[in-house]
Length: 103
Image 1 (spheres, rainbow, N blue to C red):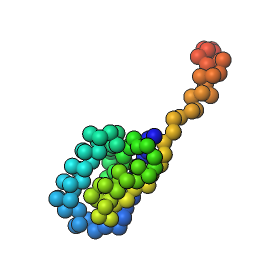
Image 2 (tube, rainbow, N blue to C red):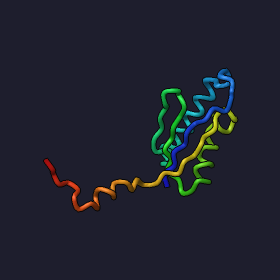
Image 3 (tube, rainbow, N blue to C red):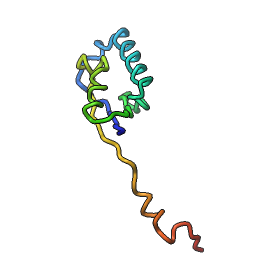
Image 4 (tube, rainbow, N blue to C red):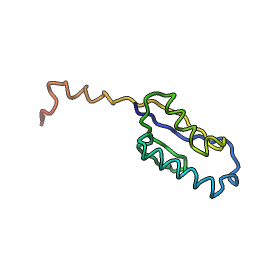
């Protein structure tokens, strides 16, 4: 199952994000990427992290995120959204008039 994890502000003072802690975070993200738990990772325009996770359950996704140093130190947290396949294309693919050209 795929999950979207959206970083949320935990109210931490920016000075607690030490270079060592951020390096530890990067190492753990890399490990999780190599394991296949993290499939994609981005920053948005506000520098919040967005992760696409591949996990067997929401609980597993929560455990993966809890293993991140910034999360385990209470500096960030994530909202988790379960992702499902988009079914909207069936509205046009199953339409007998799909693909016909009208002038």
